[in-house]
Length: 90
Image (cartoon, rainbow, N blue to C red; front, side, top):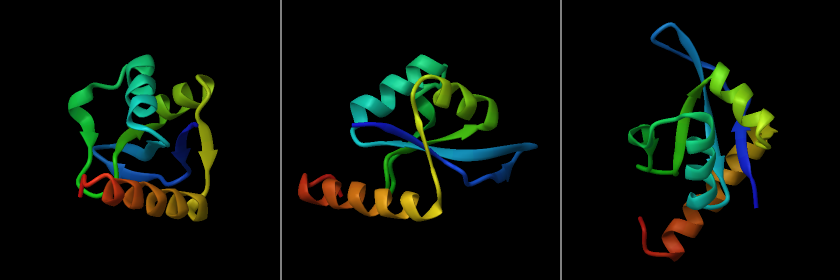
């Protein structure tokens, strides 16, 4: 099991944002707590994740998050959506 940060960088309010995802919600929230991300920033409309600024992204990697590319991000999103469907969360 792991936490992942993608290489995607989209502008938002003067910052560049990436996505932080994980194999489980427990891992995702634990990493968010570890690097100082507020739980209110959690997003779960389609795929559970946090949008994180580059300084938090670096902290996540320093705390064990795995950097992934666009292809891996797409594969992970499909897997997480399937898990949500299988668990009746969608």
